[in-house]
Amino acid sequence: MNIAIAVDGPAGAGKSTISKAAAERLGFLYIDTGAMYRAAALYVVEHGKDAANEDDVKLLLPEIDIDLRDGKVYLCGDDVTGKIRTPEISVASSNIAVFPCVRNKLCALQREMAKRQSVIMDGRDVGTYVLPDAEVKVFLTTSAEVRAQRRLKELQEKGIESSYDEVLSDIQYRDKNDSTRKMAPLKKADDAVELDTGNLTIDESIEALISIYKEKTNA
Image (cartoon, rainbow, N blue to C red):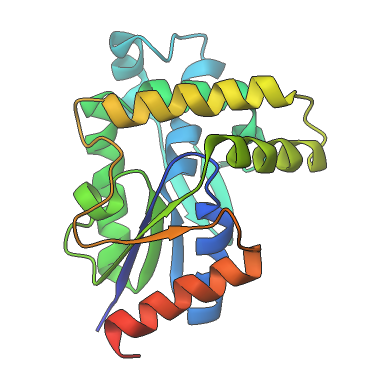
């Protein structure tokens, strides 16, 4: 039987890092839904359109093809794994994520992936909207300040110039956008286990996620 683990939470909570590592440990497929929105946003930006304009985005949507494989993100056949992690694309992805046309297209792709094998899927609305029947639901969280420090470190390690204030502002903007959008806003599912990673190392967070999975499924 296939198992679905839904991991939700705000930007910079460590969802991708923790979920990816846990998926490798468990032999599950890791699906980074945020990366899919970022890839779609990159396509819009690179084609000179406004990611905050629904008509612009809707016009390009049929052309967008996204694939996740071997830990990389492919946009219309091109590896864009590194290009989607800039502050500009972070904001653009938050903007397009509020549009129902975008969410409907990407959610359909994500649900199809989850039908084929056991998955750990992370995002903003996986447990509440994309996979409401997931066997395991976890809500990762910590303060905006801690998340900004972590994200800045990630960017610096990748050679991407940014400042703490810029990253914090980006995270606060995305938090507001994600939690107030009309369609499938960011929120903790009623049956999700909350996991605050603020005082945990990455390894401790991974262990905590796997422990929740084992407890919920008697694995």
